Image 1 (cartoon, rainbow, N blue to C red):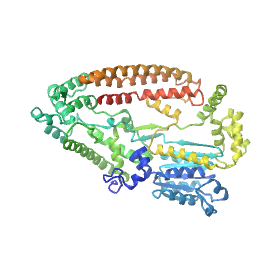
Image 2: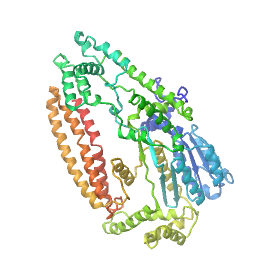
Image 3: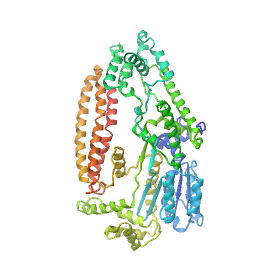
Image 4: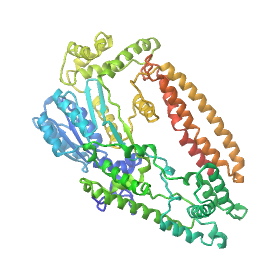
Amino acid sequence: MKGDSDTETFLSRQGPSEREKKYDRQLRLWAADGQEALERADVLLINSGSGVVGVETLKNLVLPGVGKFTIIDKNRVCESDLGANFFLDEGCLGKSRAECCVDFLQELNQDARGEFHSTLDVPYLESLFKRRHFSFILCTFPVQAEILYFIKNYTNSSRIPLILIHSLGFYSYFRSLLPVTIPIVNTHPEAEANIDLRLLNPWKELSDFSQSLTKDINQLNDHQHGHIPYVALLLHFLVEWKKSYGSWPNSYSEKMEFRKIVAAGARINAGAREENFDEAVAAVMRNIKIPSLSAFTQKVFEYRPNDSEAKSNFWIIADAVKQFYMKYKLLPLPGSLPDMKAESSVYVQLQNIYKRKARKDVAEICDIILKHPYGKNVQKTEVESFCKNAAHIKLIHAFNDTMDNLKLVAKTEFKNDEISIITSQPLSLLPIYLALRATSHVSTATADYIIAAIKDEVPEAGSNERVQKVSQEVARAKGGELHNISSLTGGMVAQEQLDKNNWRRDDDQLRSAKVLLEEMGVEFSNDVFAIADFWALGILINASISTLASKTKEIAIEATYEINNTSMDLFAMLDELNGIGVPLAHLFVEKVRTKKHAVSGNWSSSSKNYESQSLLRLLCVVTKIGQKSMRFKRSLKNI
């Protein structure tokens, strides 16, 4: 296993490093983990055609600091390249286009390492893929059919994301083909969700330290008594509880009774209760719980990766963490400690106790990883990140279009266009996609050729007037790219790749909604939805949310009065509020299940856009109700 002693950290105690200064703005966007993932990335561009959009995409990856990039392009620079590709000049004429582009791209950022290959055929790619394992593959159209077929098969079997890009004249599109299963380590949970105080499973060092602070708790002076960290207080009262009842407080009523016992131990100083005891009371519901795996983590542990997946660092670490869990029935300790009332020296000691335990767990998992045949290639920083987020890791199941879906979507989109013309709504962009798709393997084509190719895939599209007009425009471009169109497209593709490099969810509305629903337990036989049914459901959800808002307001009004009297029930009420979102979501799921076979319309942005947009926003609100109520809960603590 590779250690991290030589790795430049983004959190230097001596102030910002040169790298931090260089990448300051993007670090604010995707943090140190995202930057490290980008710098570890090894991107391959298979460039063909005019070759502009692929280079523009790489430009937007090289500037933020991609680790390695490779360009495969068999073409040599000609006069037509100079007018569209701003990375080429007259001195490049007759030279390898891949070599010239690599040289100029590296000038943008010396941290990025580039290489080029001027041979593009299946045997050469096969040889290259045996020697190199790329993080991402970009492929620009037009490209030979046999090469595209080989690349798709390779990326699918190797679980490597593939992005297909086509820019032609005023039109362009790109498409992401993702592995069937996408593991996500850093799901960006709220800070509180990543805290595990291990109160029901304290290790010896933590127990001993807690006992040293609370051994003679009633004999302590007011200053000492008011500065015992709430972790030590809870551990002390938990021991007393177990002596009396023989088990830990587990049910809601038991926890409420336990809170009263903790609150009764507080003293009144200067007319106010001790803050550390208030913190202890507030932490009971959140931190005193029997350890268990989340459904997402359980799915990761139950998943059986294929031979190719099993060699990846994620699954090597996941297997080691699973072995750790099977041994201790606990996940590795994240090691983070929230702020609390305590003397600085005591808090630092307690913080170090948690950090030492977290490092010990990481070290044990590293020892397990070293026994794996490919474990020596795993970075220690990857293990630390995985252990910190182990309670929240998840698998996302990707959705890749098929030809059957294309025919179904085309039929629906053309039907919706008839309504959109009457209602002055935007028309579908599907004709552009179909025309560009028809030229995926040829650099130039006539309008008749494009229309014939579209008919072969989607028969009913051949007679569509807009398809014919778009086909004529694509034919008029004669395989050429416009730099401004390709530059804009390259920026969007780079952003898509940055998202996928960090295994974040696709932002396409239809796809995101489908993934979101599938995570809630809904299975779809196809992607056709009934707009009217979903819109009616949206109204129902909206009414439910209004009721929830009213209840929140009532609790807030009561809280303003009760907070001054340190109400024991306040946060219990808020926990109940937090649970309201769950039945709402379940209600949504049940109604979706009854509509999932409906085929009367398509839930897309091309028809009744205002309805589908509003519904999607409602869906997002429902799924985030729990998070919002927890934020509300924290804000009340500061009243």
